[in-house]
Length: 285
Image 1: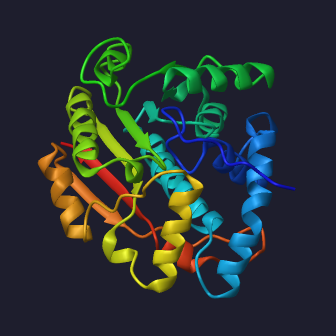
Image 2: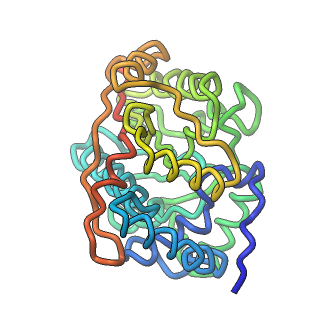
Protein backbone atom coordinates (compact mmCIF):
# COMPACT_ATOMS: atom_id res chain seq x y z
CA UNK A 1 0.00 0.00 0.00
CA UNK A 2 1.36 3.39 -0.98
CA UNK A 3 0.96 6.17 1.59
CA UNK A 4 1.19 9.82 0.59
CA UNK A 5 2.65 11.96 3.35
CA UNK A 6 0.60 15.07 4.13
CA UNK A 7 1.93 18.32 2.81
CA UNK A 8 3.38 20.35 5.64
CA UNK A 9 1.53 23.63 5.98
CA UNK A 10 0.70 26.20 8.60
CA UNK A 11 -1.39 23.69 10.56
CA UNK A 12 1.18 20.85 10.44
CA UNK A 13 4.36 21.88 12.26
CA UNK A 14 5.26 18.83 14.37
CA UNK A 15 6.27 15.38 12.99
CA UNK A 16 2.62 15.34 11.87
CA UNK A 17 -0.21 15.59 14.38
CA UNK A 18 -1.71 12.43 12.92
CA UNK A 19 1.39 10.26 13.43
CA UNK A 20 2.17 11.43 16.95
CA UNK A 21 -1.48 11.13 17.95
CA UNK A 22 -1.48 7.50 16.85
CA UNK A 23 1.79 6.77 18.69
CA UNK A 24 0.20 8.03 21.94
CA UNK A 25 -2.82 5.80 21.27
CA UNK A 26 -0.71 2.70 20.53
CA UNK A 27 1.07 3.14 23.84
CA UNK A 28 -2.04 3.58 25.96
CA UNK A 29 -1.54 7.31 26.46
CA UNK A 30 -4.52 8.52 24.45
CA UNK A 31 -8.19 7.93 23.71
CA UNK A 32 -9.34 6.16 20.51
CA UNK A 33 -11.24 9.33 19.60
CA UNK A 34 -7.92 11.15 19.15
CA UNK A 35 -6.41 8.48 16.88
CA UNK A 36 -7.04 9.08 13.18
CA UNK A 37 -7.01 6.80 10.12
CA UNK A 38 -4.26 9.01 8.70
CA UNK A 39 -2.23 8.47 11.85
CA UNK A 40 -2.67 4.71 11.63
CA UNK A 41 -1.58 4.72 7.98
CA UNK A 42 1.49 6.86 8.75
CA UNK A 43 2.35 4.68 11.73
CA UNK A 44 2.43 1.55 9.59
CA UNK A 45 4.23 3.41 6.79
CA UNK A 46 7.02 4.30 9.25
CA UNK A 47 7.34 0.82 10.80
CA UNK A 48 9.96 -0.47 8.31
CA UNK A 49 12.07 2.64 8.92
CA UNK A 50 11.81 2.22 12.71
CA UNK A 51 12.60 -1.50 12.46
CA UNK A 52 15.58 -0.91 10.17
CA UNK A 53 17.04 1.81 12.35
CA UNK A 54 16.55 -0.26 15.51
CA UNK A 55 18.14 -3.33 13.87
CA UNK A 56 21.24 -1.27 13.09
CA UNK A 57 21.44 0.02 16.66
CA UNK A 58 19.96 3.39 15.79
CA UNK A 59 17.09 5.51 17.17
CA UNK A 60 13.40 5.24 16.34
CA UNK A 61 10.69 7.84 15.89
CA UNK A 62 8.65 6.14 18.63
CA UNK A 63 11.57 6.14 21.03
CA UNK A 64 12.20 9.85 21.10
CA UNK A 65 8.50 10.77 20.88
CA UNK A 66 7.66 8.67 23.93
CA UNK A 67 10.69 9.84 25.91
CA UNK A 68 9.84 13.51 25.49
CA UNK A 69 6.09 13.04 26.07
CA UNK A 70 6.41 11.11 29.32
CA UNK A 71 9.10 13.45 30.64
CA UNK A 72 6.91 16.52 30.05
CA UNK A 73 3.96 14.71 31.64
CA UNK A 74 6.05 14.02 34.75
CA UNK A 75 7.06 17.69 35.08
CA UNK A 76 3.47 18.85 34.73
CA UNK A 77 2.24 16.25 37.22
CA UNK A 78 4.74 17.50 39.77
CA UNK A 79 3.85 21.17 39.19
CA UNK A 80 0.11 20.53 39.62
CA UNK A 81 0.47 18.16 42.58
CA UNK A 82 2.60 20.74 44.42
CA UNK A 83 -0.10 23.37 43.99
CA UNK A 84 2.22 25.67 42.03
CA UNK A 85 0.23 25.34 38.79
CA UNK A 86 -3.52 25.46 38.35
CA UNK A 87 -3.69 26.50 34.69
CA UNK A 88 -2.01 25.06 31.60
CA UNK A 89 -1.58 26.38 28.07
CA UNK A 90 -0.36 23.78 25.56
CA UNK A 91 0.78 25.62 22.44
CA UNK A 92 0.45 23.80 19.10
CA UNK A 93 -1.26 20.91 20.89
CA UNK A 94 -2.27 19.06 17.74
CA UNK A 95 -3.82 15.70 18.64
CA UNK A 96 -1.96 15.47 21.94
CA UNK A 97 -3.97 13.62 24.61
CA UNK A 98 -2.47 15.65 27.45
CA UNK A 99 -5.35 18.10 27.86
CA UNK A 100 -7.97 15.35 27.98
CA UNK A 101 -5.81 13.17 30.24
CA UNK A 102 -4.93 15.85 32.80
CA UNK A 103 -8.47 17.26 32.88
CA UNK A 104 -9.95 13.86 33.70
CA UNK A 105 -7.28 13.13 36.32
CA UNK A 106 -7.21 16.49 38.10
CA UNK A 107 -10.76 17.72 37.53
CA UNK A 108 -11.51 21.12 39.02
CA UNK A 109 -7.93 21.48 40.31
CA UNK A 110 -6.83 22.67 36.87
CA UNK A 111 -7.97 24.61 33.84
CA UNK A 112 -6.36 23.20 30.70
CA UNK A 113 -6.21 25.24 27.49
CA UNK A 114 -5.09 23.63 24.26
CA UNK A 115 -4.08 26.24 21.70
CA UNK A 116 -3.40 25.76 18.03
CA UNK A 117 -3.82 27.42 14.66
CA UNK A 118 -7.51 27.89 13.74
CA UNK A 119 -7.99 24.87 11.45
CA UNK A 120 -6.24 22.50 13.84
CA UNK A 121 -8.21 23.87 16.78
CA UNK A 122 -11.46 23.23 14.89
CA UNK A 123 -10.44 19.66 14.15
CA UNK A 124 -9.47 19.02 17.76
CA UNK A 125 -12.72 20.41 19.13
CA UNK A 126 -14.70 18.28 16.68
CA UNK A 127 -12.86 15.12 17.72
CA UNK A 128 -13.30 15.80 21.44
CA UNK A 129 -17.02 16.45 20.93
CA UNK A 130 -17.55 13.34 18.78
CA UNK A 131 -15.84 11.15 21.37
CA UNK A 132 -17.70 12.72 24.31
CA UNK A 133 -14.46 13.94 25.86
CA UNK A 134 -15.43 17.56 26.55
CA UNK A 135 -15.22 18.76 30.17
CA UNK A 136 -15.51 22.18 31.86
CA UNK A 137 -11.82 22.01 32.82
CA UNK A 138 -10.59 21.65 29.25
CA UNK A 139 -10.98 23.93 26.23
CA UNK A 140 -9.41 24.29 22.79
CA UNK A 141 -8.76 27.75 21.36
CA UNK A 142 -7.21 29.28 18.25
CA UNK A 143 -3.73 30.74 18.74
CA UNK A 144 -0.84 31.99 16.63
CA UNK A 145 2.30 31.49 18.70
CA UNK A 146 4.16 33.97 16.47
CA UNK A 147 1.76 36.86 17.10
CA UNK A 148 2.85 39.64 19.44
CA UNK A 149 -0.68 40.99 19.82
CA UNK A 150 -4.18 40.66 18.44
CA UNK A 151 -7.02 38.19 18.92
CA UNK A 152 -4.85 35.12 18.25
CA UNK A 153 -1.91 36.15 20.43
CA UNK A 154 -0.78 34.47 23.63
CA UNK A 155 -1.04 37.80 25.45
CA UNK A 156 -4.75 37.99 24.61
CA UNK A 157 -5.34 34.38 25.64
CA UNK A 158 -3.61 34.99 28.98
CA UNK A 159 -6.15 37.70 29.79
CA UNK A 160 -8.84 35.00 30.02
CA UNK A 161 -6.98 33.15 32.80
CA UNK A 162 -7.21 33.57 36.57
CA UNK A 163 -4.43 36.01 37.58
CA UNK A 164 -4.25 34.42 41.03
CA UNK A 165 -3.24 30.92 39.86
CA UNK A 166 0.05 29.62 38.52
CA UNK A 167 0.42 28.85 34.83
CA UNK A 168 2.43 26.28 32.86
CA UNK A 169 3.09 26.74 29.15
CA UNK A 170 3.96 23.60 27.17
CA UNK A 171 5.33 23.14 23.68
CA UNK A 172 5.99 19.65 22.38
CA UNK A 173 7.37 18.85 18.95
CA UNK A 174 7.32 22.50 17.92
CA UNK A 175 10.60 24.35 18.40
CA UNK A 176 12.90 22.51 16.02
CA UNK A 177 10.75 23.31 12.99
CA UNK A 178 11.43 27.04 13.36
CA UNK A 179 14.62 29.02 12.94
CA UNK A 180 16.47 30.35 15.97
CA UNK A 181 15.15 33.92 15.84
CA UNK A 182 11.58 32.64 15.73
CA UNK A 183 12.17 30.35 18.71
CA UNK A 184 13.74 33.18 20.72
CA UNK A 185 10.72 35.34 19.89
CA UNK A 186 8.38 32.65 21.21
CA UNK A 187 10.42 32.27 24.37
CA UNK A 188 10.27 36.01 25.00
CA UNK A 189 6.47 35.97 24.56
CA UNK A 190 6.13 32.99 26.89
CA UNK A 191 8.29 34.58 29.60
CA UNK A 192 6.47 37.92 29.35
CA UNK A 193 3.10 36.22 29.85
CA UNK A 194 4.25 33.91 32.65
CA UNK A 195 5.68 36.80 34.67
CA UNK A 196 2.17 38.13 35.26
CA UNK A 197 1.14 35.05 37.29
CA UNK A 198 2.15 33.92 40.80
CA UNK A 199 4.02 30.94 39.31
CA UNK A 200 5.09 30.68 35.70
CA UNK A 201 6.79 27.57 34.29
CA UNK A 202 7.63 26.40 30.80
CA UNK A 203 8.16 22.79 29.68
CA UNK A 204 9.29 21.72 26.23
CA UNK A 205 11.49 19.41 24.19
CA UNK A 206 14.53 20.60 22.26
CA UNK A 207 17.11 18.95 20.00
CA UNK A 208 20.74 20.08 20.38
CA UNK A 209 23.57 19.86 17.89
CA UNK A 210 25.76 18.19 20.53
CA UNK A 211 23.26 15.31 20.85
CA UNK A 212 22.77 14.83 17.13
CA UNK A 213 26.18 13.85 15.82
CA UNK A 214 27.42 10.73 14.07
CA UNK A 215 26.48 9.11 10.78
CA UNK A 216 23.44 7.22 12.11
CA UNK A 217 21.99 10.27 13.78
CA UNK A 218 22.56 12.48 10.74
CA UNK A 219 20.73 9.99 8.53
CA UNK A 220 17.91 9.77 11.08
CA UNK A 221 17.59 13.57 11.20
CA UNK A 222 17.43 13.82 7.42
CA UNK A 223 14.73 11.14 7.28
CA UNK A 224 12.83 12.91 10.04
CA UNK A 225 12.99 16.13 8.05
CA UNK A 226 11.59 14.30 5.02
CA UNK A 227 8.85 12.80 7.16
CA UNK A 228 7.65 16.16 8.46
CA UNK A 229 8.22 17.83 5.09
CA UNK A 230 10.56 20.47 6.44
CA UNK A 231 13.98 21.21 7.88
CA UNK A 232 14.73 20.19 11.47
CA UNK A 233 16.64 23.10 13.03
CA UNK A 234 19.34 22.58 15.66
CA UNK A 235 19.53 26.03 17.26
CA UNK A 236 22.04 25.48 20.02
CA UNK A 237 25.30 23.60 20.22
CA UNK A 238 25.12 22.67 23.89
CA UNK A 239 23.00 22.59 27.04
CA UNK A 240 24.80 25.67 28.39
CA UNK A 241 24.08 27.64 25.21
CA UNK A 242 20.36 26.79 25.29
CA UNK A 243 20.05 27.58 28.99
CA UNK A 244 21.75 30.94 28.44
CA UNK A 245 19.27 31.74 25.63
CA UNK A 246 16.36 30.95 27.95
CA UNK A 247 17.78 33.29 30.61
CA UNK A 248 18.24 36.03 28.02
CA UNK A 249 14.63 35.53 26.90
CA UNK A 250 13.37 36.39 30.38
CA UNK A 251 13.36 33.14 32.36
CA UNK A 252 14.93 33.41 35.80
CA UNK A 253 15.60 29.68 36.02
CA UNK A 254 16.33 27.28 33.19
CA UNK A 255 17.69 23.78 32.84
CA UNK A 256 17.83 21.10 30.16
CA UNK A 257 17.99 17.41 31.00
CA UNK A 258 17.92 14.05 29.24
CA UNK A 259 14.60 12.16 29.42
CA UNK A 260 14.33 8.55 30.54
CA UNK A 261 14.43 6.02 27.67
CA UNK A 262 11.09 4.35 26.97
CA UNK A 263 10.04 0.98 25.50
CA UNK A 264 8.51 1.03 22.02
CA UNK A 265 5.71 -1.24 20.77
CA UNK A 266 8.45 -3.76 19.92
CA UNK A 267 9.13 -3.98 23.67
CA UNK A 268 12.66 -2.61 23.28
CA UNK A 269 13.98 0.25 25.42
CA UNK A 270 15.07 2.89 22.90
CA UNK A 271 18.06 4.59 24.50
CA UNK A 272 19.28 6.05 21.21
CA UNK A 273 15.92 7.72 20.57
CA UNK A 274 15.79 9.29 24.04
CA UNK A 275 19.36 10.54 23.63
CA UNK A 276 18.35 12.69 20.65
CA UNK A 277 16.20 15.06 22.69
CA UNK A 278 16.47 17.24 25.79
CA UNK A 279 13.67 18.44 28.04
CA UNK A 280 13.41 22.13 28.87
CA UNK A 281 12.30 23.19 32.35
CA UNK A 282 12.24 26.95 32.82
CA UNK A 283 10.58 29.29 35.28
CA UNK A 284 9.93 32.99 35.78
CA UNK A 285 10.92 34.05 39.30
